[in-house]
Image (cartoon, rainbow, N blue to C red):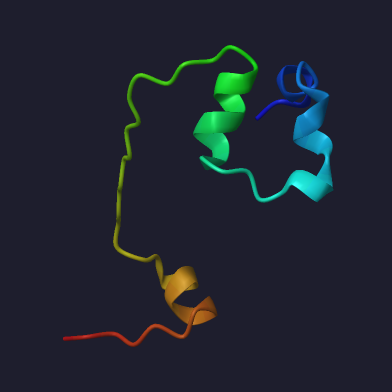
Length: 61
């Protein structure tokens, strides 16, 4: 959450109140943001030779 937006509710910075019931969605609600949907996007690709080396990924034949 951007600091400028969270700053509209100073209570969000009160560590005595953490963790917030309802999490991020409730925190957004306290500053007037209503979330109507959440989308997750998952993508994948084959590792490059460099990634395979850096991450110790074995080659399968």
